[in-house]
Image 1 (cartoon, rainbow, N blue to C red):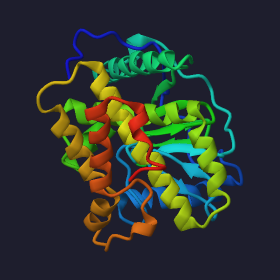
Image 2 (tube, helix red, strand yellow; image 1 turned 90 degrees about the vertical axis):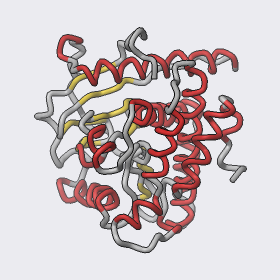
Image 3 (cartoon, rainbow, N blue to C red; image 1 turned 120 degrees about the vertical axis):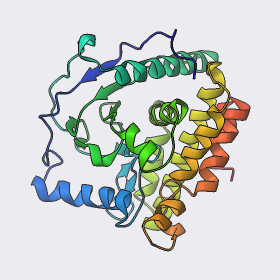
Length: 303
């Protein structure tokens, strides 16, 4: 992507990494471990889904929603979670690393894109905040752990990112290139867009009324729409270069639930998918990249 001459977003916070830990979801450390173990397990092969872009899960019989990509699966966003008290992070730009500066250029481009799209529909886009942390942090949804991957928290409407994840994206998932990394951020921003649209809240309510398998299927639709929205952003930026589409599709293929489960030595179980198969993720990202139209990202009525 041609980002060298682009401006950076000022919507960021930096956490020092000493906060967080396994407390804050209520019910003590045991309650949080009960939440994190499935998330981490899904990522590293203990069941469920890995995240690239976000780790999303359905908790308590189809109850709470965690969306992330692994954001792209990644971690994801956490809906319906108790709010955790947290101190404000630093906004001192002198503390930013080069990759964080780059990430803020990506974020600024998403703000420009979605600001225009919302304006065209007569609405005003409210930007999210990108929170950088290392290893451990805190979010409005509880502890932030690097093992969770990037995620969006609807409680405080912030994205949480340990940029070391980009190294894992390349080394573990063989998804290299700057657009693959930008796709991770754009996917998480897409969850923020879904939050502003009311989609996350509606789906969370629906998940409370259905079985776990049906709740997973709803979560897949959320994640695939976020993939499509990420493609819409990519199309709208005018900053893409030769090879960027291939980088994005490679990342989408690498983090499909079926691919992740096979990589963990298991037979893919569609009922357990929470982000979609590799083919589905590639399809919806490509649709967004080709059309540049959010209206074409209706995963709830289309397949």
